[in-house]
Image 1 (cartoon, helix red, strand yellow):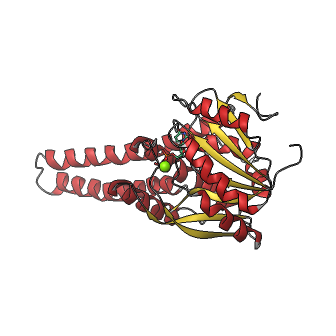
Image 2 (cartoon, helix red, strand yellow):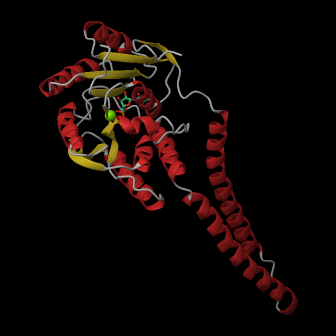
Image 3 (cartoon, protein in one colour):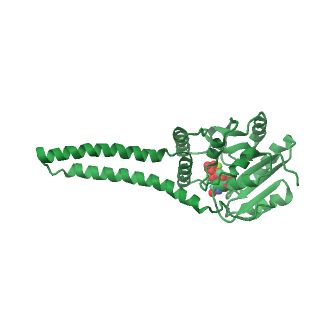
Length: 314
Ligand code: UDP
Ligand code: MG
């Protein structure tokens, strides 16, 4: 296939041996009726199970199947990034490899996009098979993020979406290390809309996102698109300083004109309070500074070990 396909489907894969085959079947039957040329770009993100050999098997028997094999686990967002970069289609779909994003929705996404949208994202109406804490923290996070960022990042939306080649080109010019792709795509603009769908349970296996990973991801999202936490540090610093100033006047007044009690309690409280506020401020600075230093290093985002795409290996 030398000519470019119309549709590329990008799927990150990390230990999904139980799901690859079934999802591939569902994908094929969803795309066949479309009568367009398509490809699927699997990105194996350092899987430790048989995922890679299953993908290579698929690629051998079906020329629609492309794969990129990372040298180690680089994380979901970078796996998607690699897939998008090497997708050849005019339209690119991003979806998970565990069946939670139904491939059956792709024809609808494509139809909607062709009405004149560069981005159509799939918004989750409900989420099955995820526990209360995950749903609650996700809900809170999306709403807080929407409040404190200056761009409109849609709530309750993962990376499941279709984007036009134009968006791919612009994404490749946004080289930040800590990716929050759904935020980057919102930031780019053009015409964006959404379709609603019911998020299904994983077909097999367990989630790869621990709460720790989700926390890091949330911080990436916030620090990439908002400087609000830094402002909080500054504002609370001012407020605390004002209070402290009043207290200093008060204690001096007490010393010279009132009775000086050994004020250990108040002393302790104020020292601890100030210490806490300062640490919060320093912590926030650190979060941003760490990311600045990562970006200054300018390392490649991911390293490819093997691929059946001609230009994917370095
Ligand atoms: N994934 C990945 N690298 C990782 C973690 C996850 O490529 O380090 C893939 C995973 O195989 C799946 C998708 O990203 O296709 C979403 O992961 P998961 O289903 O674990 O996340 P959840 O749906 O629980 O948020
Ligand atoms: Mg999942």
